[in-house]
Length: 366
Image (tube, rainbow, N blue to C red; front, top):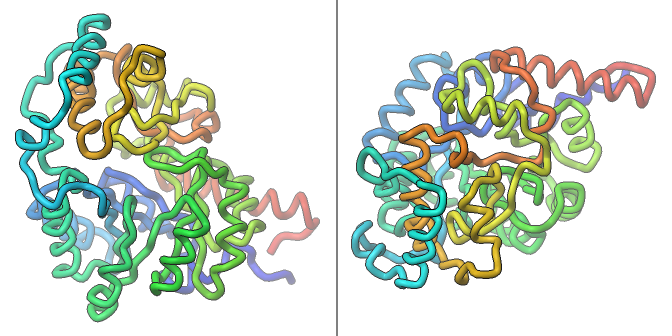
């Protein structure tokens, strides 16, 4: 009998049953996927160090020793220090005026509370370092860097038995991180949700796999079906990194308004722009992204200043649950997310679809 195509070196490295990584900001989703045989990485870039420590304990109490990961952003290009007010003061008046224009044109309400961005690790390097110190102290099984190279933490992490995953959008970035010694490399294509580059998934994955050697490659970008997982394995990946797939699941804490939009969305309902954070990212289209794509928009600010500028709009829309204004990071595979299922069922369906795809091609099931 042929080898099980879903038993990959990523499975062997992590001790998991299925080569599927769920990236999520929801602890309940993470635990459900882990306990169903997959792997989960919890995004913690928006949380305080104390909250991160509490979340790590919460997960550990519910997964019976199974491994998990935590994702932070570690951009080297942001200021070393600086409070929300200090950084906001550097935003030019031209950009403030354009933000006010959008707010007035679409009647965007004010946020109901303080801007949540004050704990974002991408705000300054000092904030990111404090978050990272918690992961090192807690010896989490895996640290993933959603933005920025994690090469500077490799020695410290490895001394503590922690694996480090790097996320890249270009072959040259992958080469540097592989040579530095990351334990796995996430090759993320243009169709991905959130921060992503301009190279397509079908190009970046085999490109990175060609230089990865024994380092597992994880394919990211548009992966929402078993056919995507099968294709990723054929391209040289050892597994997939999925995010959009879990946003509308039963356990997800995403607002029901956004869940309904995701279930109705197609690939062309997303927008790839740097107007939210100052770095290119894919989100559901909204008035903010549409206005910044117009000819009268000023040049987008670098991070973290553009994120500070957009945060008032985003939080105002979310706090007041304005469906016409709200947005969410979403990949182009969103058109295949059509029902609100439990995370466990989503994982099992993904595996079944993958095996069916291989059987259709080869005539035999591994």
